[in-house]
Length: 525
Image (cartoon, rainbow, N blue to C red; front, top):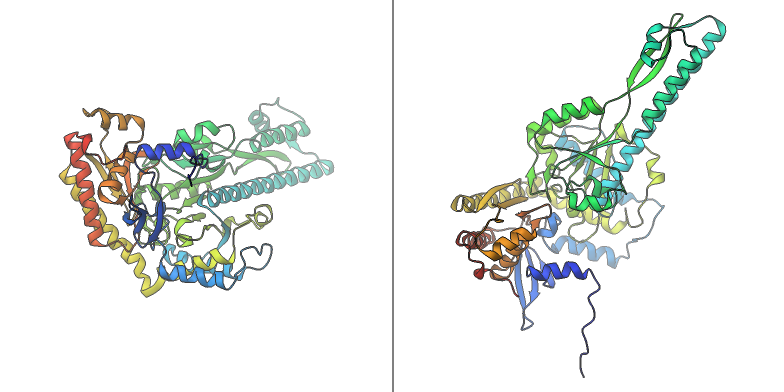
């Protein structure tokens, strides 16, 4: 019987064509540990060493036996996935365990309240939504207090003579001797105008926080943002390691609410800071921006700015967190403390789609839980798997954190050896723990036409990844916003032999670039 015509490609066909151009359009049929398997032309499995690691989702590798066993136990027990609007004690246990570890790492005992979600971008959006709700409520509380003060002055004026100080009229641009009601009207007008301003959102240049309608506007890559600029709140992007810019932002954006106070028989003006800052988003180690760690020095400047501006810090630990850098929170390693944390990826153990937004008590608003929800969040399956992941991280005195740091150091040392051997080809090696980046020098002026064309197409890193896949059986990708940088985010199971294998692959790639010999690139046509 004839097989008939092939079915049309309907699942993101353009993306598949881009992958095909780089030789990355392969189907994987199985995954275990650090290895994915694809089928060869003869139908036999071909092992591929996975250094992409699910973009940081596989702290314990593919299908870790203990995590799989827990998933199977939950499914066999018919653990409810859909039990919304009921008690979820397992979610509370997961939140409590996250709190315990966060308290240990940050040296605080202030509780963090948890809102669960399905993806990292959703956790980021939940954090920003919560921060904006908090800002709006604080603003409303301040305006109510100001209005109450005005009524007290009116009551006093009805009982005895009061006078508007000349300085008040000058401050408001009103004629001297203006009536009290005119002064009240002008103060009210100015406060209402200030309260109508869009909130100030800050994010670091190079940062990536998702591609949903809101989170994409917090992502620095203009190619992702520009087509949807009319749909979301815009962020002001802060350059790395520029504390002077933080000072400028504080000066530019801070604003004061005006309040009238009665000083004896005189009405005078006082000022109080307006809550204009919604949030400052940052990654302790930028993932899609090229694997760029935040320095402890600049983290200190950010913390100082946030305190001075009363600007909540939303720390995106989606890719860097869950032990990958040697701690649950990469931010704790540089002394940064968040008002909000977003965790995802490895929280689900490489199986469940799970994330969480954590907000500290000082910022917490109970109303948020009634205006924000997510159908699949906080279910028994993902919460229990999250508990199993934390159990594995904390076992043997936190051996997993130690191994992430040790294996990360070994990986970084190897990458640095290759950089030293090819200074004409490699621009930089950087990262923290098992989150490493390997940046190639710009090849847009290459003498080899194919290499030059790949560099000009914006797909340079993908072509190199295609060569590593087909010539060396190694899987990795460039970072999305810095395509000259290959990412390496393996699990803690990575061995010296596997690191050596990557070294041979990268040495080959660097040799091809040095020789400008694209004919050696092993990418199927």
